[in-house]
Length: 167
Picture: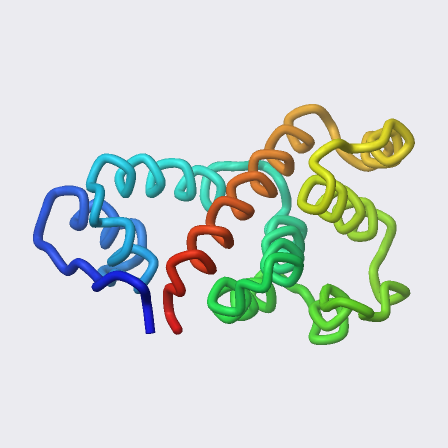
């Protein structure tokens, strides 16, 4: 059970969130709506990550799922696993993102994203050699978008876990 009640409101902020989500609010949204300004900013940031970037969707979702795995955010995993499949990830590739998964099913770009996600999430600092390997696969804009995605979904997962959203 969530640590706070979910807010269901007809506010302008809730309407903007519903518009981005195809007419519905999720439990995450219901928790965020305790603070409408934060919910509104969150909606703008996550809307940009999900819909306005140039980073391929399968790589975005790989990073999101790996963050969810590392941070124990099952709600986030459950929400994004179908999106990862829609973006072209196979069942085997998705399984590789779990702790101890078979990384051999991932290509070079995917492994670079996985390693970068692990470094950012576990240690925050990214070793130079790992960053150099990332640069072999991505341009500057893609690296910025990937970095923001990983950082943002660390925020999402920690919010979900701390407040027990969706449990």
